[in-house]
Image: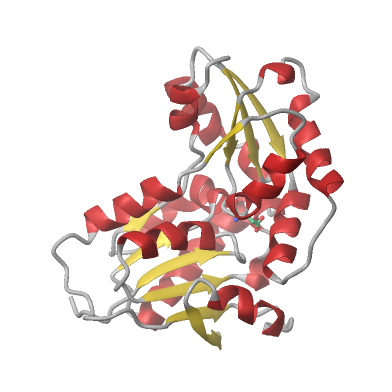
Amino acid sequence: MQPDQPILLLDTGVGGLSILEPVRALLPHAPIAYALDQAGFPYGQKPEAELAARVPALLGRLVEHVDARLAVIACNTASVIALEPVRTALAIPIVGTVPAIKPAAALSETRTIGVLGTESTVRQPYVDNLSREFAADCTVIRHGSHRLVALAEQKLRGQTAPASDYAAVLDGLFSQAGGENIDTIVLACTHFPLIEEELAAAAPRPVRFVHGGDGIARRVAHLTEGQPWPAETRPGTGIFISDGSDIEPLRAGLAEYGLTRLETL
Ligand code: DGL
């Protein structure tokens, strides 16, 4: 293991920054390669079979390109669909991002949890299994929203949206049977913690939001314990799997997360 071998994170866009932030806080000297699969965006609206093939192939290419020591699938959709094929295909440790239903169930007083993810994530059997295993005594209400992914992408490009846009998405949870009892919402898409403040402000009453970023950072720290790191924090690299669109509007947003070197693959 060489000190400059990076931790690789993959998402379709800016969502994985909600994982990168706690990883950087815990491992400030870790070299970072952050891949944005713009060409595959949005994973949340792709057929399962397509993702189960695309994600392992792309991660394999990226791991080789940057000589990663560990990879984080910083996307719930890709994790609940492709974690196993990725682990089968790659030899380095892989950390997935799965909906934080377990911590949400531990916190909910009303025993009613909302799960906000992409359309694809909320319909996966993986979510049924997590609910059965960790929230058997809770009512789990799900809502899938691509609109919320788009709002997070816009925010990182410096664009704002009215509170009513966020309220309309939350209504997809609260208006379901039993929705009036929700006290805890799982942000089961990595894009959503980036707009947690906007969601909280738009909610009709106070609710608790839960996501897995800190737990993933602890897992990464555990898996890399004892490994060598550079002596100082280095600029991180943003790697665009390009769909041909202009990357300039994201430059400032990515720089806030230490990603000041951008390249296109
Ligand atoms: N950030 C991804 C997730 O956590 C979803 C974004 C997309 O649909 O591409 O599910």
